Length: 303
Image 1 (cartoon, rainbow, N blue to C red):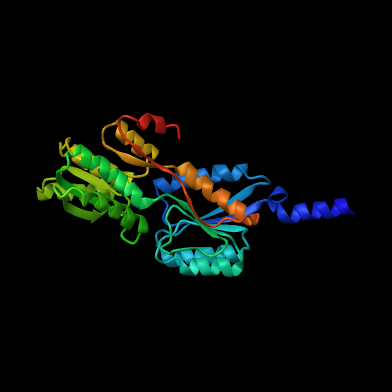
Image 2: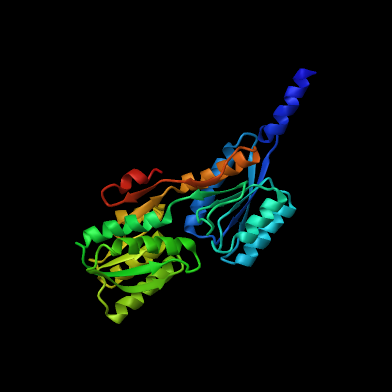
């Protein structure tokens, strides 16, 4: 009898050992970086004891659509939900719906603009303000503490855009001889980064360096500079994607900040599984970041 009770308790507290977990995943907008994240999540899901299936939905940048996707996950009684928020200032209803349904919720990559999370809700990602500081510290040093800087912003509604740019400006406050001469959004996209840079070049304004909020926009800007024959302008990116690392190798980017995509993606699945298993997991789970330069980029190519 005691043996039967023990087996029953094991079943109750360790559901993943006996059945496959269903995890709904809602991403803000599918792009190259999100593709890397999703790949890391899928690889980790294969390693979950008992298995885990991921149901992926793309909000296309639409807050209302993303909320509907989360509500669909809830109606399907998934075991956990992972959300890369379409707007970090508009996550309250997502959190409310998930907690009311008693379904664990993991935000990944972009932290909601709240001071704290209720029980059963966590965030997995990186310190975006520190990322902006690291990028600009490198550029400022290479600029010799003076010159004209252009900033290419991500999607304006995105908290990562605000925090990374705030980090850049934290550093600029220490360098009064570095002037911001241009600042415009390219919506995280390579083609738009190229268009923005091309327009700046046509205006004839001097630019010594570009701080882009991600690698994709930075690569686009660097391509426009190369086409115009402007080889001396430094361009910084963020993410350290495979394309970003290759851009450093090719001399398109001068610097990027490596965000551990595998750590973030796999970590979100790990967090979801731990919450499903009723582990006491709370608050923010920070993934370390590292500066990538022409001198050390090779050590990141295998990560």
